[in-house]
Image 1 (cartoon, rainbow, N blue to C red):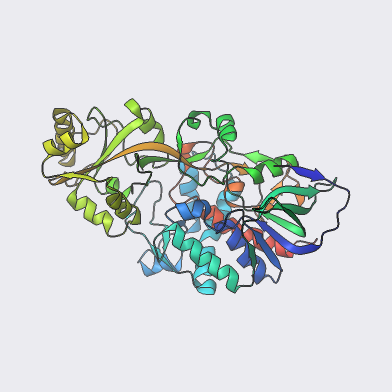
Image 2 (image 1 turned 45 degrees about the vertical axis):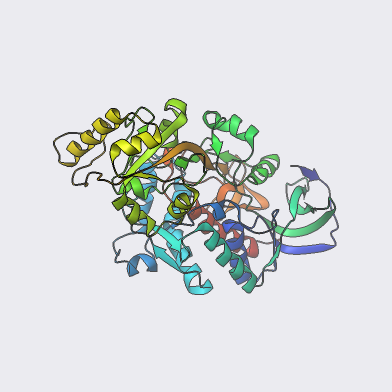
Length: 466
């Protein structure tokens, strides 16, 4: 990772808008740049566009959308989303970026639907967890891989050039920090160079860079990483070398329910619908609905860093109807089931009496006779009934949330607030709106900035003077 300083450079090939990274941010930036009339080249290091988006649920958080109205949600608004973002982060999110997400996420999702044919359904199973209204917009295939396929096809239809197996290993920049072009490493070790007028960094975060994680997020240095290994922070490092400011580098999206050892995300809907988390001693240890991202911290603090998601066949069927991940867990043999609680405890090597006492206490909380010491409201939630089910889980790091400081136009900024000459960023390469900690992350707030600032970055790069 390096910036090569040159006074000038002649390139055999030159493009007005150069986008580094073909994840959601990069492909959406390409759609916006092409709509603005700019010739656009997207460079992707892997053999196919996939990245963090492909590993995700594929959900985009957005408000006041056509999909919400189709689902009967007519009272959401940008102001309500903004207030939810600020409340979740204890008012520590960048208010400028939070306003942009609140105002532009809905129009971005509607634009993807109306102009590019990427349909979304509102997922009503995801309730609460910081959102005062249902806002998770899922692609028709209900997966990140499906979303990536649709975005890639849309970018090609729009006339964007996408070059895969094209790893950018250096930027050429002059003394004013203007990026003149890039050097590309191909799979056979050869190099190519491309000049540009404007650059969009869509290289995602730094979860796959163990040194950066240890430096900025030391509490997760030894945790499992369940993200794309290509997320090595290259774009952030280039921006810093060019003199850019960064923000919230300590923030990240965690996972508290990663099936162990199967490495499949266990859907949180099992817990929303009444499931519970138990440690290996058969005891609850946390409010399972308090913070989906921050759940990784208490799970990793349990003996052996292990917990069990306990649920029943009824909850299983509810989640199975709309969860690709749960089907994958079932196919991989991660779901353990038994006709009685004692048999399931034996299957999971858990102490039966402790588990029985724990579930009896939850039953009392459901009737309103007992208050949960962890603060969860079980009132009216039907107790678990046989047959019982469980999945062994651990905590993990999924996605970093800090990055280059950008403005409302997705321009990368210096520490004094001045924009760099021609550098733009979005998604994981840019500062998000999760504040400085893991607990500030709202569900689907990874793809919301990716989509929103991807569109803004592409549009700005296409219209910004060379």
